[in-house]
Amino acid sequence: MKPPPALLTRGLALVLALACAGIAPASGGGAGGGRWDVLQRSIGVSAMHMQLLHNDRVIIFDRTDFGPSNLSLPDGRCRRNPRERVLPVDCTAHSAEYDVASNTFRPLSVFTDTWQFNYEFFPKADASDASAIALPFLVQTRDPEENNLYPFVHLNIDGNLFIFAKNRAVLLDYRKNKIVRTYPELAGGDPRNYPSSGSSVLLPLKPSPTEAEVLVCGGAPAGSYNSTKEKTFFPALVTCGRIKITDASPAWVIERMPSPRVMGDMILLPNGAEVAIINGAMDGTAGWEAASTPAYAPVMYRPDHAPGDRFEEQSATDIARLYHSAAILLRDGRVLVGGSNPHIYYNFSNVRYPTELSLEAFSPEYLDSSNDALRPKITDPSPAGPALYRACVRAWRRPIESGRTERAEGEECV
Image (cartoon, rainbow, N blue to C red; front, side):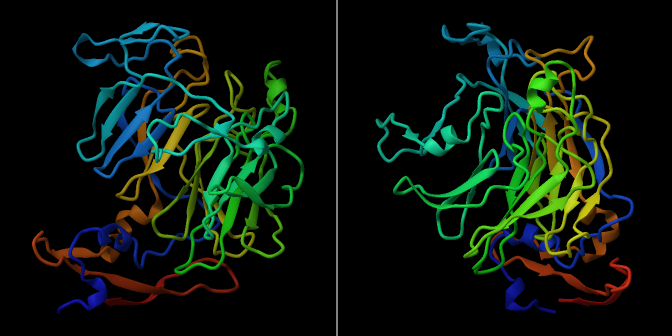
């Protein structure tokens, strides 16, 4: 049977969008799901940051002032930088390229670090323009103890930038460098940015959206950072704030996670119905030796579920992902996880949580083999003509009395 026009395309760009079609996310409560796989025991570099490229490769990089890494630059090359504080001549790599398809990696070279209270556009309209733009809001939200570095930034549907720092948020018209809206403070007064590092995400938008919501989760109570210097690790924040940033009178709605978390990462998943909250610690803050209890288990957040039924704890890893860890979504639906270095330099001995050089993949429940029959299949793989797909959609019954998803009532394939 020839598929309807909606399932025809001249490329394969639709494959991943359809890969989760008809696969219902697990309901809240009960034992968690998902699977962990170690991809590489060591890539030689601790993944402080990761970025997925269009060719299914991931650029991984760390700071350059940690001293030597465990990955040498090729062909005896060395990085020479007289301004470098630790190693003016460094023959090890602080960046790597990971090939998802082949599960291989190679060293790359990164030269400098950056740290500023301003912002820039890249690429610049004028390549000779070396200016940066001051943002007083970042200074206003700073304090001597907490710093409140690394604000959360989301592109609103009106084209302006939602910026959150400490417990405050504004809407910035970046074209005019003008704040056009100030939002209410997030209740409680506790900071949510570095070193009390929470995490944030713009929740999935509907088609032709007229509304946008932001979720901010975790962080650390005020005073936590200084306490870690005395080896006192306060529990992290267990709360999230959710706000409709397009509302005429926006207000924060407070929700509670299953467990406290600081230094977490939040990832929008491709089924459009879930947010993964992953990595981090349950106490302390970001910083050197500043946390004691890793958060091993990810949490799923389902924004369209009713309040009280939105969070579900998932299967736990056994690798600590503390300060300077990272997570990104891969095109096949897995979450790539790496990094963790709570020490000033790479340190592998006589410490509770050594510098972590491994890469893992977390496969959410929608990738479980029990859902294989629901995945669309390419019936004509010819690259020259239209790609043909066969997809099945299930209708799910959800009993009101239990709030749990039950068996499928029916299935239709096209």
